[in-house]
Length: 310
Image (tube, rainbow, N blue to C red):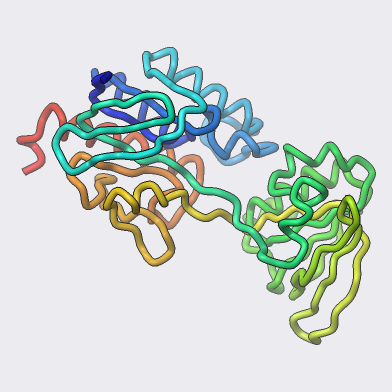
Protein backbone atom coordinates (compact mmCIF):
# COMPACT_ATOMS: atom_id res chain seq x y z
CA UNK A 1 0.00 0.00 0.00
CA UNK A 2 1.43 3.38 -1.04
CA UNK A 3 1.54 6.12 1.59
CA UNK A 4 0.84 9.77 0.81
CA UNK A 5 0.44 12.94 2.81
CA UNK A 6 -2.56 14.11 0.80
CA UNK A 7 -4.72 12.52 -1.88
CA UNK A 8 -6.70 14.92 -4.08
CA UNK A 9 -9.72 13.42 -5.82
CA UNK A 10 -10.32 15.33 -9.04
CA UNK A 11 -7.83 17.02 -11.37
CA UNK A 12 -9.79 20.10 -12.40
CA UNK A 13 -8.85 23.69 -11.62
CA UNK A 14 -9.40 23.30 -7.87
CA UNK A 15 -7.58 19.99 -7.64
CA UNK A 16 -4.59 21.14 -9.68
CA UNK A 17 -4.26 24.37 -7.67
CA UNK A 18 -4.45 22.32 -4.47
CA UNK A 19 -1.79 19.99 -5.83
CA UNK A 20 0.60 22.83 -6.65
CA UNK A 21 0.30 24.36 -3.18
CA UNK A 22 0.41 21.01 -1.38
CA UNK A 23 3.67 20.05 -3.08
CA UNK A 24 5.19 23.47 -2.46
CA UNK A 25 4.27 23.04 1.22
CA UNK A 26 6.32 19.85 1.31
CA UNK A 27 3.49 17.35 1.17
CA UNK A 28 3.76 14.12 -0.80
CA UNK A 29 0.81 14.65 -3.13
CA UNK A 30 -1.26 12.34 -5.32
CA UNK A 31 -4.02 13.61 -7.62
CA UNK A 32 -6.53 11.09 -8.98
CA UNK A 33 -9.06 11.60 -11.77
CA UNK A 34 -11.51 9.27 -13.46
CA UNK A 35 -10.84 11.07 -16.75
CA UNK A 36 -7.86 13.09 -17.94
CA UNK A 37 -6.47 15.96 -15.89
CA UNK A 38 -7.83 19.40 -16.74
CA UNK A 39 -11.45 19.26 -15.68
CA UNK A 40 -14.54 20.89 -17.15
CA UNK A 41 -12.71 24.09 -18.12
CA UNK A 42 -11.04 22.07 -20.89
CA UNK A 43 -14.34 22.20 -22.80
CA UNK A 44 -14.58 26.01 -22.81
CA UNK A 45 -13.96 27.62 -26.19
CA UNK A 46 -12.45 30.64 -24.49
CA UNK A 47 -11.89 32.07 -21.02
CA UNK A 48 -11.90 35.86 -20.78
CA UNK A 49 -12.15 36.49 -17.03
CA UNK A 50 -9.20 34.64 -15.52
CA UNK A 51 -6.60 37.13 -14.23
CA UNK A 52 -3.45 37.27 -16.31
CA UNK A 53 -5.06 36.16 -19.56
CA UNK A 54 -7.12 38.61 -21.60
CA UNK A 55 -8.33 35.61 -23.59
CA UNK A 56 -7.26 31.97 -23.55
CA UNK A 57 -8.93 28.73 -24.58
CA UNK A 58 -10.12 26.50 -21.77
CA UNK A 59 -8.03 23.67 -23.15
CA UNK A 60 -4.84 25.72 -23.10
CA UNK A 61 -5.50 27.04 -19.58
CA UNK A 62 -6.14 23.55 -18.19
CA UNK A 63 -3.03 22.25 -19.96
CA UNK A 64 -0.93 24.98 -18.35
CA UNK A 65 -2.34 24.16 -14.90
CA UNK A 66 -1.74 20.43 -15.38
CA UNK A 67 1.81 21.00 -16.60
CA UNK A 68 2.49 23.33 -13.66
CA UNK A 69 1.28 20.74 -11.15
CA UNK A 70 3.41 17.99 -12.67
CA UNK A 71 6.45 20.27 -12.94
CA UNK A 72 6.45 21.14 -9.23
CA UNK A 73 6.20 17.47 -8.33
CA UNK A 74 2.57 16.44 -7.96
CA UNK A 75 1.85 12.88 -9.06
CA UNK A 76 -1.22 12.76 -11.31
CA UNK A 77 -2.96 9.50 -12.21
CA UNK A 78 -5.34 9.93 -15.14
CA UNK A 79 -8.20 7.50 -15.73
CA UNK A 80 -8.03 6.04 -12.23
CA UNK A 81 -11.47 6.41 -10.66
CA UNK A 82 -11.87 6.21 -6.90
CA UNK A 83 -14.12 3.30 -5.97
CA UNK A 84 -14.19 3.58 -2.19
CA UNK A 85 -12.83 5.38 0.85
CA UNK A 86 -12.49 4.80 4.57
CA UNK A 87 -12.23 8.21 6.25
CA UNK A 88 -13.07 7.20 9.82
CA UNK A 89 -9.50 6.98 11.11
CA UNK A 90 -6.47 9.23 11.15
CA UNK A 91 -4.90 7.05 8.46
CA UNK A 92 -7.41 7.29 5.62
CA UNK A 93 -7.77 4.66 2.92
CA UNK A 94 -8.45 5.49 -0.73
CA UNK A 95 -9.32 2.62 -3.06
CA UNK A 96 -9.28 3.00 -6.84
CA UNK A 97 -9.85 0.77 -9.83
CA UNK A 98 -6.22 -0.32 -9.71
CA UNK A 99 -4.68 0.35 -6.28
CA UNK A 100 -5.15 1.18 -2.61
CA UNK A 101 -3.55 4.22 -0.98
CA UNK A 102 -3.11 5.38 2.60
CA UNK A 103 -3.14 9.12 3.27
CA UNK A 104 -3.25 11.63 6.09
CA UNK A 105 -5.65 14.02 4.36
CA UNK A 106 -8.14 13.95 1.50
CA UNK A 107 -9.32 16.83 -0.69
CA UNK A 108 -12.49 16.38 -2.74
CA UNK A 109 -12.34 18.42 -5.94
CA UNK A 110 -14.64 16.26 -8.01
CA UNK A 111 -16.37 19.15 -9.78
CA UNK A 112 -19.73 18.84 -11.46
CA UNK A 113 -21.46 17.37 -14.50
CA UNK A 114 -23.81 18.81 -17.08
CA UNK A 115 -27.46 19.11 -16.11
CA UNK A 116 -29.96 17.50 -18.45
CA UNK A 117 -33.29 18.87 -19.66
CA UNK A 118 -35.22 15.73 -18.83
CA UNK A 119 -37.44 15.98 -21.90
CA UNK A 120 -38.61 13.27 -24.27
CA UNK A 121 -36.01 12.44 -26.90
CA UNK A 122 -33.03 13.84 -25.00
CA UNK A 123 -31.57 10.48 -23.99
CA UNK A 124 -32.44 8.87 -27.31
CA UNK A 125 -30.52 11.47 -29.32
CA UNK A 126 -27.44 11.91 -27.13
CA UNK A 127 -24.51 11.85 -29.50
CA UNK A 128 -26.93 12.10 -32.42
CA UNK A 129 -27.49 15.82 -32.26
CA UNK A 130 -27.97 16.34 -28.53
CA UNK A 131 -24.76 17.68 -26.98
CA UNK A 132 -23.61 19.27 -23.72
CA UNK A 133 -20.34 20.67 -25.09
CA UNK A 134 -20.22 23.26 -27.87
CA UNK A 135 -16.46 23.08 -28.34
CA UNK A 136 -16.49 19.28 -28.52
CA UNK A 137 -19.32 18.87 -30.98
CA UNK A 138 -19.89 22.26 -32.62
CA UNK A 139 -17.54 21.60 -35.57
CA UNK A 140 -19.74 18.66 -36.63
CA UNK A 141 -22.52 21.15 -37.44
CA UNK A 142 -20.76 23.57 -39.73
CA UNK A 143 -23.31 25.54 -41.79
CA UNK A 144 -26.17 23.77 -39.99
CA UNK A 145 -29.07 25.05 -37.90
CA UNK A 146 -28.44 24.56 -34.17
CA UNK A 147 -30.26 25.41 -30.96
CA UNK A 148 -28.77 26.39 -27.60
CA UNK A 149 -30.78 25.98 -24.39
CA UNK A 150 -29.94 28.21 -21.42
CA UNK A 151 -29.42 31.77 -20.28
CA UNK A 152 -26.23 31.89 -18.22
CA UNK A 153 -22.59 32.52 -19.05
CA UNK A 154 -22.03 29.03 -20.42
CA UNK A 155 -25.01 29.26 -22.77
CA UNK A 156 -23.89 32.66 -24.04
CA UNK A 157 -20.27 31.58 -24.59
CA UNK A 158 -21.50 28.51 -26.47
CA UNK A 159 -23.83 30.67 -28.56
CA UNK A 160 -20.98 32.99 -29.55
CA UNK A 161 -18.76 30.04 -30.43
CA UNK A 162 -21.44 28.33 -32.53
CA UNK A 163 -22.31 31.57 -34.33
CA UNK A 164 -18.95 31.31 -36.08
CA UNK A 165 -19.65 27.75 -37.23
CA UNK A 166 -23.37 27.23 -37.78
CA UNK A 167 -25.53 28.96 -40.39
CA UNK A 168 -28.18 29.77 -37.78
CA UNK A 169 -28.15 29.64 -33.98
CA UNK A 170 -31.43 29.67 -32.07
CA UNK A 171 -31.32 30.35 -28.33
CA UNK A 172 -34.17 29.13 -26.14
CA UNK A 173 -34.41 30.62 -22.65
CA UNK A 174 -37.26 30.08 -20.21
CA UNK A 175 -36.98 33.62 -18.85
CA UNK A 176 -37.18 37.04 -20.48
CA UNK A 177 -33.55 38.06 -19.94
CA UNK A 178 -30.14 36.41 -19.80
CA UNK A 179 -28.38 35.86 -16.46
CA UNK A 180 -24.98 36.14 -18.12
CA UNK A 181 -22.30 38.83 -17.93
CA UNK A 182 -23.31 41.99 -19.76
CA UNK A 183 -20.29 41.82 -22.08
CA UNK A 184 -21.39 38.42 -23.35
CA UNK A 185 -24.98 39.58 -23.87
CA UNK A 186 -23.68 42.60 -25.78
CA UNK A 187 -21.53 40.41 -28.03
CA UNK A 188 -24.51 38.18 -28.86
CA UNK A 189 -26.55 41.21 -29.94
CA UNK A 190 -24.03 41.85 -32.73
CA UNK A 191 -24.46 38.39 -34.29
CA UNK A 192 -26.83 38.47 -37.26
CA UNK A 193 -27.27 34.69 -37.34
CA UNK A 194 -28.44 34.40 -33.72
CA UNK A 195 -32.16 34.37 -32.91
CA UNK A 196 -33.36 34.44 -29.30
CA UNK A 197 -36.65 32.97 -28.10
CA UNK A 198 -37.56 34.36 -24.68
CA UNK A 199 -39.95 32.68 -22.24
CA UNK A 200 -39.67 29.47 -24.21
CA UNK A 201 -38.85 25.87 -23.30
CA UNK A 202 -38.28 22.61 -25.15
CA UNK A 203 -40.98 19.98 -24.75
CA UNK A 204 -39.57 17.27 -27.00
CA UNK A 205 -36.62 16.50 -29.27
CA UNK A 206 -37.50 14.56 -32.41
CA UNK A 207 -35.68 12.93 -35.31
CA UNK A 208 -34.78 9.68 -37.03
CA UNK A 209 -31.12 8.72 -36.88
CA UNK A 210 -30.30 12.34 -35.99
CA UNK A 211 -32.08 15.29 -34.44
CA UNK A 212 -34.45 16.89 -36.94
CA UNK A 213 -36.90 19.06 -35.00
CA UNK A 214 -37.80 20.27 -31.52
CA UNK A 215 -41.19 21.01 -30.03
CA UNK A 216 -41.21 24.36 -28.22
CA UNK A 217 -43.72 25.90 -25.83
CA UNK A 218 -44.18 29.59 -25.19
CA UNK A 219 -44.51 30.00 -21.42
CA UNK A 220 -46.64 33.12 -21.81
CA UNK A 221 -49.16 32.01 -24.44
CA UNK A 222 -48.83 28.24 -23.86
CA UNK A 223 -48.72 27.77 -27.64
CA UNK A 224 -46.50 25.06 -29.06
CA UNK A 225 -44.49 25.14 -32.27
CA UNK A 226 -42.06 22.99 -34.24
CA UNK A 227 -38.58 24.18 -35.18
CA UNK A 228 -36.27 22.39 -37.61
CA UNK A 229 -32.72 22.09 -36.20
CA UNK A 230 -29.80 19.73 -36.68
CA UNK A 231 -28.49 19.87 -33.12
CA UNK A 232 -29.49 20.84 -29.58
CA UNK A 233 -26.79 22.12 -27.21
CA UNK A 234 -28.00 21.88 -23.62
CA UNK A 235 -26.29 24.55 -21.50
CA UNK A 236 -28.36 24.83 -18.33
CA UNK A 237 -25.67 24.51 -15.71
CA UNK A 238 -24.08 21.72 -13.74
CA UNK A 239 -24.86 19.38 -10.85
CA UNK A 240 -22.20 18.45 -8.26
CA UNK A 241 -20.31 15.16 -8.37
CA UNK A 242 -20.80 14.54 -4.67
CA UNK A 243 -22.12 10.97 -4.64
CA UNK A 244 -18.79 9.55 -3.48
CA UNK A 245 -18.46 12.14 -0.71
CA UNK A 246 -21.99 11.50 0.54
CA UNK A 247 -21.38 7.75 0.61
CA UNK A 248 -18.34 8.26 2.85
CA UNK A 249 -20.14 10.36 5.45
CA UNK A 250 -19.36 13.87 4.21
CA UNK A 251 -22.23 16.31 4.80
CA UNK A 252 -23.91 17.73 1.71
CA UNK A 253 -26.69 20.30 1.44
CA UNK A 254 -30.17 19.92 -0.02
CA UNK A 255 -28.82 20.65 -3.52
CA UNK A 256 -26.10 18.02 -3.32
CA UNK A 257 -23.13 20.32 -2.71
CA UNK A 258 -20.49 19.47 -0.09
CA UNK A 259 -20.75 21.71 2.96
CA UNK A 260 -17.47 23.48 3.77
CA UNK A 261 -16.38 26.27 6.10
CA UNK A 262 -13.98 29.12 5.30
CA UNK A 263 -11.06 26.71 5.68
CA UNK A 264 -12.61 24.33 3.10
CA UNK A 265 -13.09 21.77 5.88
CA UNK A 266 -15.90 19.26 5.74
CA UNK A 267 -17.50 17.69 8.82
CA UNK A 268 -14.82 14.96 8.86
CA UNK A 269 -11.35 15.66 10.33
CA UNK A 270 -8.67 15.77 7.66
CA UNK A 271 -11.19 15.84 4.83
CA UNK A 272 -11.46 19.00 2.74
CA UNK A 273 -13.31 20.03 -0.42
CA UNK A 274 -12.79 22.68 -3.08
CA UNK A 275 -14.29 23.91 -6.33
CA UNK A 276 -17.65 23.39 -8.00
CA UNK A 277 -18.56 20.40 -5.80
CA UNK A 278 -18.76 22.66 -2.72
CA UNK A 279 -21.57 24.90 -1.52
CA UNK A 280 -19.59 28.06 -2.36
CA UNK A 281 -22.10 30.27 -4.23
CA UNK A 282 -19.77 31.34 -7.05
CA UNK A 283 -18.74 28.73 -9.63
CA UNK A 284 -15.80 30.19 -11.55
CA UNK A 285 -12.26 29.08 -12.40
CA UNK A 286 -10.85 31.81 -10.15
CA UNK A 287 -12.90 30.80 -7.11
CA UNK A 288 -12.12 27.12 -7.68
CA UNK A 289 -8.39 27.90 -7.74
CA UNK A 290 -8.70 29.97 -4.55
CA UNK A 291 -10.58 27.22 -2.75
CA UNK A 292 -8.02 24.66 -3.91
CA UNK A 293 -5.20 26.79 -2.50
CA UNK A 294 -7.00 27.17 0.82
CA UNK A 295 -7.74 23.45 1.05
CA UNK A 296 -4.09 22.56 0.40
CA UNK A 297 -2.71 24.98 2.96
CA UNK A 298 -5.26 23.88 5.55
CA UNK A 299 -4.41 20.25 4.83
CA UNK A 300 -0.76 21.13 5.44
CA UNK A 301 -1.70 22.77 8.72
CA UNK A 302 -3.80 19.74 9.72
CA UNK A 303 -0.90 17.36 9.05
CA UNK A 304 2.16 19.37 10.12
CA UNK A 305 0.89 22.03 12.52
CA UNK A 306 -2.22 20.67 14.26
CA UNK A 307 -1.48 22.75 17.38
CA UNK A 308 -2.29 25.91 15.38
CA UNK A 309 -5.79 24.66 14.66
CA UNK A 310 -6.98 24.33 18.26
